Length: 295
Image (cartoon, helix red, strand yellow):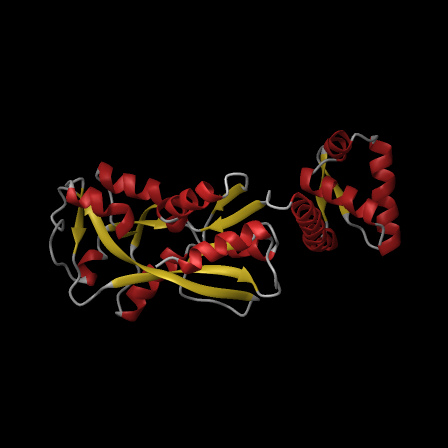
């Protein structure tokens, strides 16, 4: 397969336009079109179809785009690793993290790391569990720090770092604030939920299923932890939140904690690595050593 034509195809597919791809690649539109046609002839497939002023991917084009992106992710990974090897102690540490570790654990860990290795460039990309795992497997991150309970058979090595307790919270003046409430009463309140793919959302729904209670009513849905907590603080909704994030708010009386009889929720935080990676680069190795040796 012609990799030059494949690279041009990826640019066209990602931008949805031959014109935009030509501008980005600094080549002419006819040259871009010619390479796409050449690739389609080589594969004996139609990859793109016109759509308004742009283009759309065919089913075959979407398949090729998703697979080809991985090829060039690996290509970029190889180039970056070679650069780091040449640079010696100057490297890059790329972390994919779910919201809880990113907001409340990584800042302390990275402060200690950067005090020792100031020249290492650190990049953190925060998302839900599925997004973080995907970034790790696509070599867009060197490691992932994830709060999660359920795992599939994808090639990941896991190291348990710690457990974090989770509390149910409500607005400060809610009748349930500071009270012991049953789960079937709490579920009648509007809940603030995370998006699909969030392990906290899955843990919450699993809790209700385990106790034979109908899932909660969605009051608001957020793609982040802090925004949800601030909504409760502002006076609306119920949510399951990490103790690390809300303890001070509870102590100051800005939100209220709800106690559920005989229910204690704690969630594990894992360090995740790709299974096939035998020897991480020096910048990554130093961070792993620091993390795994911490008490």
